[in-house]
Image 1: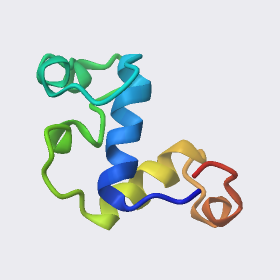
Image 2: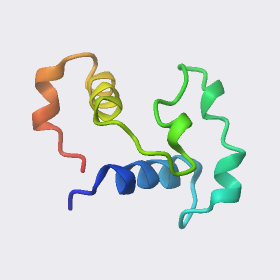
Image 3: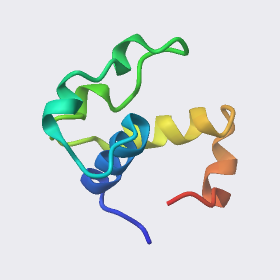
Image 4: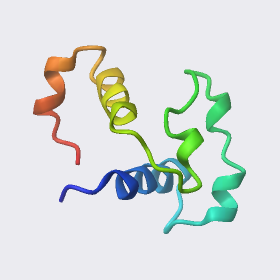
Length: 77
């Protein structure tokens, strides 16, 4: 099931933090800006700011090893 950008961002944060549901207080303490592999692209938007579509695109391209043509075949929602 596809999600709107805001819902997809929340879903990513919930999964990354190991939460059962969205919890603003716990997300305030997110350490996504200090990841060992670089900053989380959604860190700035974790508390509800609108996520630009190009941020999702950059995240997907990074996840697919830098190959943008693989994004359309990604099984993730």
